[in-house]
Length: 341
Image 1 (cartoon, helix red, strand yellow):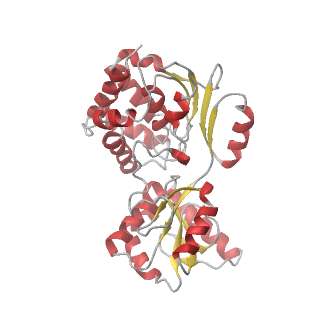
Image 2: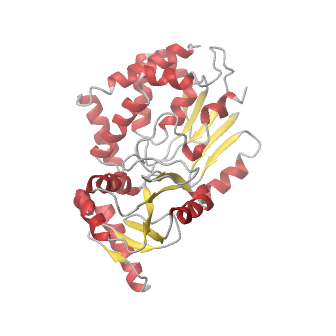
Image 3: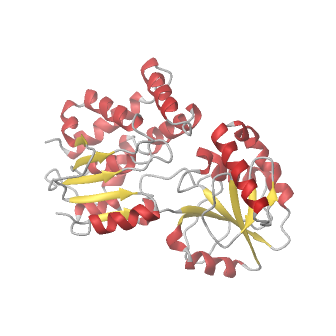
């Protein structure tokens, strides 16, 4: 069995490997992932890999993270089933890494949308530390598990809750990010907000899908910031979604604001379809704080530059930059694992 420190050092070496982003082996794997999922571009995969390297796979970060928990080299080992999502590149890596760091066996059911990148990273980890290979099993169906961490849609979550009800589990549903604007944002801040909206084509659970705006807000300044992503409309799958949404709005005579690369619709809902963005007006910060509090179970994170009571917020441009302790749905997976003992 590997020690905690040896597992951390192996992950750190994997991070060092990712420093060499131009090596032919890695580039070939990236091209394979792009060819299997049209939503994965080379740029989005590189963004995700760099994030893993800089925020997860560094020895100092891993050591600091694990010091927050009561850990030892003899943590009881369990077989934990992982049902991974595939909406953005390597979105399931944090669960895989957390199991490994805390000495658990991962039974991994990959998403059909992302079956190249994480297996490659685990292959490299096995080359760095052959003993680590025993921590990971790819499965088509979960059997013989002691606990489960599953990520999916709201519909699949209901099935997961029923199917895995007899074992400890974490079941994640659909969530999105929301942003609160004051009308006083600088052009630079609005360009960062554009990153929160358009990175990964808006497919991530941390992408902003809903904005709250003060009454009388001038959308022109926001649209100017969106110019940063003007080429996104040339991506065929994104364009197909844009055209589909526009057709629906027109056929149903739904009021909307048409921009060259995104469609805006006033709506109370947090989640919006691909290539569209919901918005709601507000009069006071207290008003928007109450609404966000009421809908917090639909929200992954809140982007704002003002205080919203007790609600946690992140700065503009940071919604897709989670740290190692920013757990999905606010559920501490490390604590969940340690409480299995």
